[in-house]
Image (cartoon, rainbow, N blue to C red):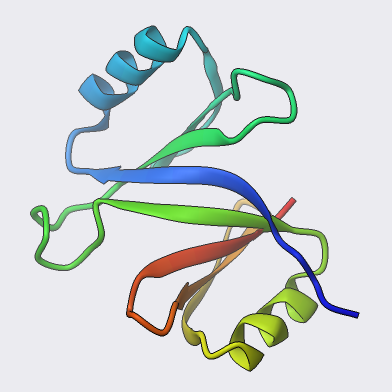
Length: 118
C-alpha cells in the first residue's frame, strides 16, 4: 500500500519574522495557531485547509536556505519516508522539537520539502 501525503503547510523562512507574520495574518484574516522560538504557524482559513508557517533562520536569503518550502502531513512518518526514498528523494535531516517531528528531504531536482507528523 502506498502512502499518499497531504499538503499540510507552506513554510516561509526569514530573519525577522514579526513583519512577515503581521502581514500574512492581516492579508489572510487568520490568527496564530502555535508559536515556539523558531516557528510560528497560522491557523488555516478553512479547518481542513493548508496552513502557513514561518521559520526563523540566521542566514541571509539565498545563501543557505530556501525562502519557501512545502510541508506534507503524514500519519505514519516511517512509511512516508520510505516512499519518498523509493521515488528518488534524498534524506537531508531529521528533527524533533517539543514533540513535533519532521524529516527534511530533497526531491530529485534538489528542492527541499518536509514530511511532518499530523
